[in-house]
Length: 258
Length: 155
Image (cartoon, rainbow over all chains, first blue to last red):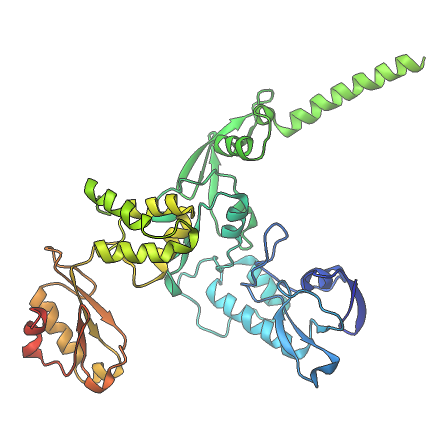
């Protein structure tokens, strides 16, 4: 265990833990867009920056992204010092210029008192903030279907060669993790479309409800050692079946106790 | 993207085989392919991904990131015209117009016979001899409009 100081309060933390986890456990609200527990941190959104110092730093302090900074003994952290708030405001201001239509960015900026960006808005600025959450989760899953393409202001997240991605299984992890809901997809008539690729959805054998894509089911069966018939029945029907069998067990147990 | 010939495919396999079969060889392999074909054919990218065990999305990401790689075919001779501050002041724009009309293509394009490609660069660190053009790897300084044709002919 390591003892650190957050906003003047002494706090215990696990060794090797990232600062953001400790800060959030203290119910201190710091914004972050690229951080997600499902993927490795990468510190691209810069919003979780905090000011850190130590007693022997002679009054010097520095800014670090708390999602990437492991706790150290005797660390003194301020999450809302004037300097760090100023920094966060600048970043939110820039995000607001980049993605003026994003609701989450508007909300975060409003919390810091910014309703209108002081920079020039990007013409037709989309909601992608290049946080790489989607590419990281795709990599984590082992598909690697999408990546950053081009560089500088032309950079976008796209499948290779600009074609429907061969490696995509249509799991929607990228769309679900996207903090600004930029990645578009739709389910229609038993078909799912994402990244320009169309997938067939598996229907539940009992109730006929559409569950996941056939490609994703096959992928999980192949890679994660899941029984091949696992995805034939939807979760709701599995639960119903389980309840029925549980009922039978209870009745049987009652019979025995008599 | 243009299709490559059957004998090119074996050439691609040879180029990849010259480098260690590991993800770290990616850039070296792409450089070798670029040198051989003057661009990165789609088939070469897929073969590189397969042999080195790098996801196709990573290979595509790297090949679009660096300016040294091109995904569209480029000419045998690459004419780079400097439009940095010094070259711009000394008439780089006129040189560019002269070369464009001599080759009958615009900057960034390639002649239909695949001989020349014009590229614009922003300073090559030779400002003292502005305006500068680079024909393949030969630097030409103090370029005059009437001499442009000579440089293109390799004189």
